Length: 284
Image 1 (tube, helix red, strand yellow):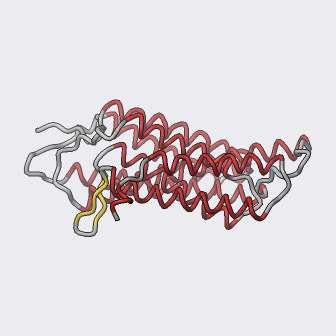
Image 2 (cartoon, rainbow, N blue to C red):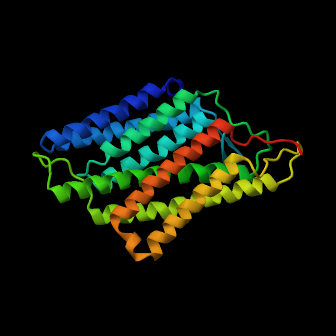
Image 3 (tube, rainbow, N blue to C red):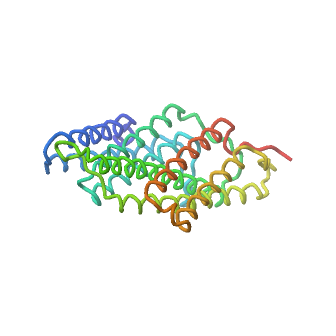
């Protein structure tokens, strides 16, 4: 099994780039069963290589059946893995849709960001590993992935709505997107699910900060990471409730704009966390 340890980032990035190239070719070339099979094959191969790389070459670790994130490098690649898995699932759900044109660039962007940060970009928390650490890390990871997925659905909704309004369909008819109704449902669902996960991540982070540690490490409540996380959760909750309860806000375009703004706020939040330092505490 030594060959598994030799798998590099290039292996799965190249696979995803091939899949993206096939998605582009589908716009201009007639539908082909062989090309669709190759697309699925490369996507599955990339996801496999991605999984192996996470296990062998990142700072993710398993301890007593729990999953731990040691730094930004593994965290970013794990987020990209979730989105790549979502793409493979969507390929089977909507095989004729050009979802990869929108989702794969986000996957590659996350991989690029993690690679740019480097494997030495470790989290700065100096704490004993507890269940709250695991819940905090996984919840924020899942919430981030769902927000990014909602962003992709929102972009597709706006593009599809504009195409239908202007009737500017491609000549070959191969550039197809899911129905507006389906995209609307997914954007609304992403708001709800991301609010749940990020809320759980915020609450677990608060519980973690209240937990006594041998080192006496705590994070000041005025820390930018805490209040920016609370602001993001508040925005997602407001957006979710608004889209559910306020009828005029339930239009597909408005929900799509909400998930786009949510993604923008998430990027700002991640920038704050990265620049300030995640889990940087002080001794009281």
